[in-house]
Image 1 (cartoon, rainbow, N blue to C red):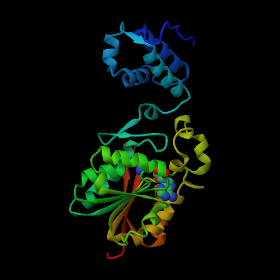
Image 2 (image 1 turned 90 degrees about the horizontal axis):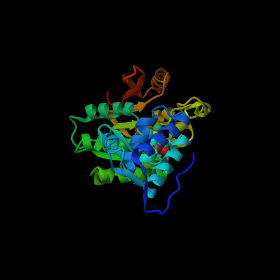
Image 3 (image 1 turned 60 degrees about the vertical axis):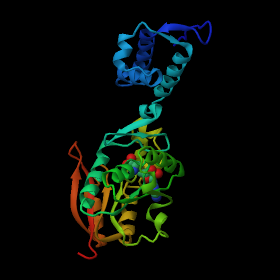
Length: 302
Ligand SMILES: C[S@@+](CC[C@H](N)C(=O)[O-])C[C@H]1O[C@@H](n2cnc3c(N)ncnc32)[C@H](O)[C@@H]1O
């Protein structure tokens, strides 16, 4: 793509309409599915002008600095970097979460975990819950907001992810109600005196089989953190580890809720039954009809 020649950095030289056309064709040529929409969102991010107002103001001139900012974002998108990382945000359960390449981009189906945990704790004021593998903190924040008297713990093995989670907790006004821990699964809270204290443990663990990561779409494969994706040889390694660790932290009758990948629910339920500590009380389906969240109750005390 030839770049316009600019006389001076401050001078406006190109119309918004021309900029939109140029970058739409660039994204289209790069194989991006919805180039018109994506350019509109990126331009909105830079110019603070809604997609509708961009069309209404197509004759407005853009400055070199504005053009350059949009061009930089478009160049990143051409490499298949997800739009959410470019915009720095993703909506989850009606709230905006700050995201960076250190965290998984929240997916809508993970809301099932929040809804089920909310149901379990609705009648239990002061419940303690833990989110294992918190990433952006979208689950921990949503739980803290849904359950205003609950105490929430959030764990991640990635220190960079925890910085993002912390920012989201503060942004959503629940920073003082969520404690963050850096470490490996529930061992990260082994010294916290919370044995047999948890009403609910939620987790959206990495669940892609290691060898399958290479087959994912480039946005996921090349940009989302591998630690958030790769779940061992069959994708269920973290589920198995959580099944063995969770009973020591759950109250009698407490629940372990885990998101699973396509076709994994039956195997994870079988594993839970084999360990003997849990009763499978539900398998929740996402909007696509896929078994997405497995729900186990701690048998101790039942
Ligand atoms: C699939 S992401 C889920 C992020 C977020 N909870 C969500 O639903 O969007 C999995 C998260 O688990 C973290 N993780 C992976 N292995 C872990 C481990 N052994 N201990 C703690 N966290 C881990 C990753 O860093 C990542 O943030």
